[in-house]
Image (cartoon, rainbow, N blue to C red; front, side, top):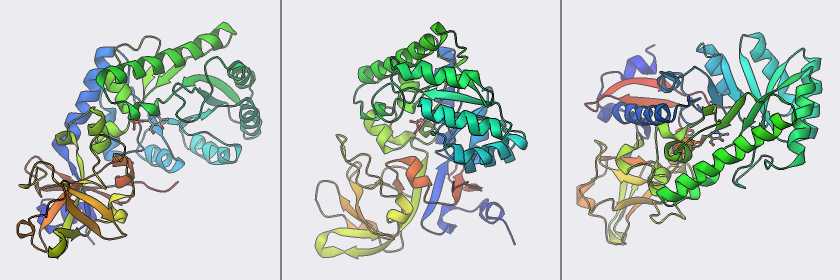
Length: 391
Ligand SMILES: Cc1ncc(COP(=O)(O)O)c(C=O)c1O
């Protein structure tokens, strides 16, 4: 039986089933190049986050010209990277001792895995379990630079306490400090993004300084989110940047101003499956199963519902500019309405015609699918790339 890649290569998107997840090769390459160029200017390497694409072929493109290490959000991603010859793996979600057997298995298979935690008690438990497993595990301490999520504030006494526990070994060693300014997604201007990037840098560089003042080695200083990576004006003291969603970009990034709608490389190909003339709206076969329930643009100046409609070639539809939006979803239905409440011109979109939906949050939409149909510069399907889901 033909693999999906063999079966799909060379066909036009009209031959694809719907819903299908599409990636535009040219936009993907542009996004990767933009991040590479930006960080080269700032003189700091990229440790790409593979959680957005979860796809070995895309990881390889993200790694071009970089030292070769990746960031993962699941152990499944770590296994997939190792299966594809990538050994330097930072698992950037708080570790618990029960996961260390799985980490030890990765290490036994040749991976160099670094883990993350943010409390002395966890450091103690992880050190003890890691020692029992015969590991000398590099551990990063997570720093809270913006009140967004996990991490220790740089001035928290627990920082040095956790550092001392990790440094004492034998199961662990202190690899450094890491922060993720997730609140950058709330920024609404270039100056706010620049300020957020600087705050992210100052917090984590300050945390590293405190550890070093306490006599501890702190070799790695890791920052990153797509908005801060692209808007940082200096990265002194930082040793690596992590970024993930830049690879596809999405409507949330466009709403922040980090990219334009035309930069978005990911879309869901969908078919019109019905009309409701009296309400001036239509249905497509991309519901929340194909788009996700993410409503990340809901509190942005332009609310894109569950996704913005594009013509089958990826360009704007002939309706009023950016007028068509998926405003409601059920499992396999998307309800498409005009943003301004006007009736959709249903004559333009007969049942069976096709559209594309741009995602609010690329990570969430991609997670609904088993893989990507990659489109070449002429809009033909070049190949199929599988994703590695699960945990
Ligand atoms: C720890 C960590 N680092 C880096 C990133 C990458 O952020 P972005 O997807 O904005 O590039 C994330 C995203 O959630 C993250 O959780």
